[in-house]
Image (cartoon, rainbow, N blue to C red; front, side, top):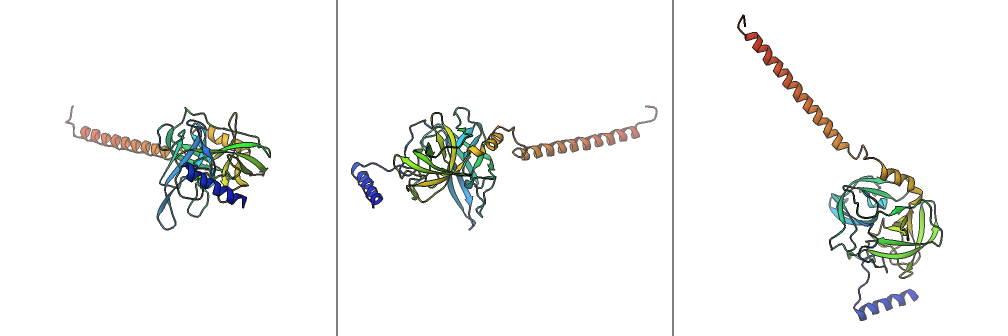
Length: 294
């Protein structure tokens, strides 16, 4: 009953004042222009469906290195629902540093590789170009404590509706419980029912001053709601994350280029060999036909 009364009161205020509900994170608040610039939106266009059609979708995430974004592992699933280390859509792009999606600024880059964690609902996404004018969100290596306050940013919906958000949202949360692979995190402000919604998946929960990542949105009840959502811990993946994002360009990332280069060298060598043999044959014919005494 109290929740119903609160909902009715909010609705009445919207009608009377002409205010509009938040466009992402249920009962969240607008992010100021330029704040939390490391926040990212991953847009997937043309995801294959079981009926041989396609659909579009998106997730949230955060820039953690110039060419890497962290998000939820389930944002990259095959038709059977299995998490995969590859893109699944015809086109996958990442927008970083753009508070309002309809405006200019920030960066929009393609995705060239995906790395899935073997132990958590976490994926690392490699970008086609480095983003060097936005400070990445640092990945923490110590777990938060129960009761610790964290912040979430995301481009998800405000509820279970279908309105596409256009502005980054944020809210403040508290850690309820620390599990081996997940955290239980509940909303605190602007409301107790501030909660992650569809397409906030992969959004970063982070400590503030300075910002340090502790988890990413994984799953939870239908939004909005009071009580905890489940987020995937990242502190216990810090070694894997650092190793992946600081490694030299991987062999597999450049496999096609490498194979193409080898194939080109083989073709060039074959062409040179054929020309050499033809030249030898022509020289032999000229010597054979030369007049005696010359």
